Length: 272
Ligand code: KIV
Image (cartoon, rainbow, N blue to C red; front, side, top):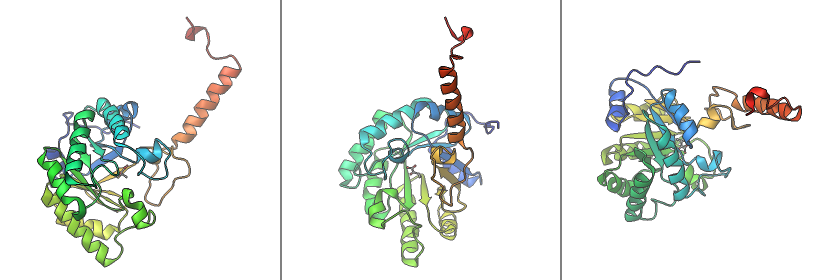
């Protein structure tokens, strides 16, 4: 399958991302965590590459996103930023780096931007962290919000179930979304909420809303190893798998093992 044809090859900025919503153009976002994958995702024509703290799960094998550190996210962010030419690169601020105080959040955000070379940061939460978000934006850093199932709060929620099904939580989410827009966020992610609520948020906000397990929005985001079928056994309802790379890789590796053991690799052409 060919890469998506991109007409404008210039670097995507926050204003271009916002303009896409105004023009009725959908936004495609995908995670990447390393240089090699970032180059491929960018070449495919992705609009935004997210250096998600899902790196904690899919790169490090942790059960949650909580253990990943700021140093580890800086390593992933820097690796991805080096591989991307066109897409906008957004990096997650990890758990514990912006919840304690506004000052600490701004300091950590400044450090992440300075040491990674990414274009923007993503933070989970609404009203509770709105002063911190304002402070980070005032420091000149673009911020993407994240509401609904915010995985850094998994222990508060008691699991990874759908959020905002009840009216009270849905009303708070809508309020939080407006607060994030008013604070200056250039976009928000809505994770695992009812599709009707996403539709309402998309209509209310002028900034783009990117959904994951949230129905139709101004764009979508998925976790790359999940959508490429590398994360064996992980099949939530919202996930569409575009490839079965684990099968492809296992076949290739099996062939390599056979070739090594049968001495058919390396051959003469592969030797010096
Ligand atoms: O960490 C991540 O990959 C994310 C996406 C699921 C939105 O936050």
